[in-house]
Image 1: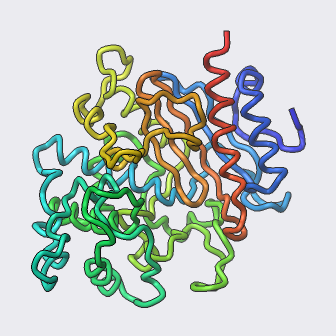
Image 2 (image 1 turned 180 degrees about the horizontal axis):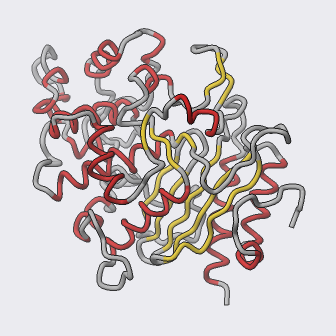
Length: 378
């Protein structure tokens, strides 16, 4: 193992030796400047078998070292850990109909449109499955300067395709979904998930908009030279989410490896409650099964909120078809194999100091394959 980057977490040496291949993938990635540091962890069943970190907050050796407890900007992992988790709970409680038209909760999405406009056919299920017909990404922040104006612009977006006919990973869709869920619960999504998801599961390091006092303890995501003109550290990197005061359905959540492993253990316990050593606290097996099903159209890997492994997946080639996961633009990922009862978390700030490097695309599958190969090795 390359000893230029020493694991910083208090992990027994036998764990480092057992997962030496995975450590090497990450050590090489840091040396190649795929990211300056990372935190990572693995759960098998209800047991945490690996929880550690490598590298630093930035590429300078004098920068703070990353630990397994280091909090990162999760970017689009927000979509599953917060927004989709909320939708799952609301469905279980009979408070959310996935086939309800979005316009029933957000009238502004349909009011004023021409007769026959397909926006009236868009449902909550379409938003979760990323097949609503909405565009993938819109730089609202370049044209508006207030949360109300951004949300209005999101409501006014024209559909690019018929609902259900095309899969297009859509940030605007999850901005609308987050707002729709707020209408259901009569509360801001950030505060609702804190009370209904994070607190019951003991996710003490997970939340939106970290306080100023904790920002120096969070790895920076980039040197912003276009909008905020400052180092982005401890505040959400996504510009649209920043304009929405750091809390939105598509981005804004911060967390660390221990919390995400607890979240993953809840999903695994709910997926196989009869065999799990841990009793699920929130979710039911039927909920997991429903939200883990691919939604179409044919060829889409998208389930409800979650992604599933596909050809050339970031999860590598060893996760079963009955797996769910998600990626974050900042370099984070969470993959959960519901068949094998295995979950893997990788947190990085791969966008430091800018967004140019795409080496994470090679690192993710190599890292996941290394972990899974180790777990099945005799």
